[in-house]
Length: 110
Image (cartoon, rainbow, N blue to C red):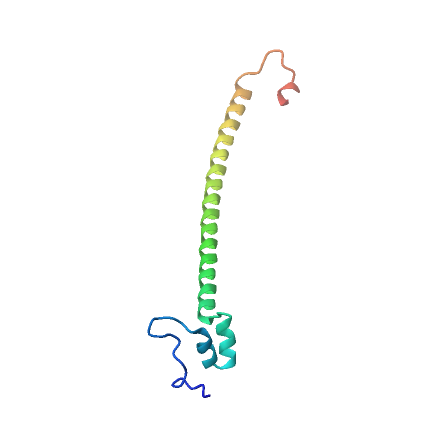
């Protein structure tokens, strides 16, 4: 029996049914093994490419979220620094403007 493409049985009949055993027997032995395992290298490659793209998108989302969080933390640090300056100014002005009459020198440091 020849395995040339012209003598290979058609994988489908006129009704659209698929005769797997006839199709597998028409293939070279290594292709029939792969066909029985339903291995499709193009599909595997496409799945790997889709997975890679998904991971890349996920990485970009995490990167954007990280950058937003860092921006938020920087603005919070700036706000706290401004409040710290104001608080220091208030404490300094209250220390210099009035001292309690019976306060001892060491008590103001507490």
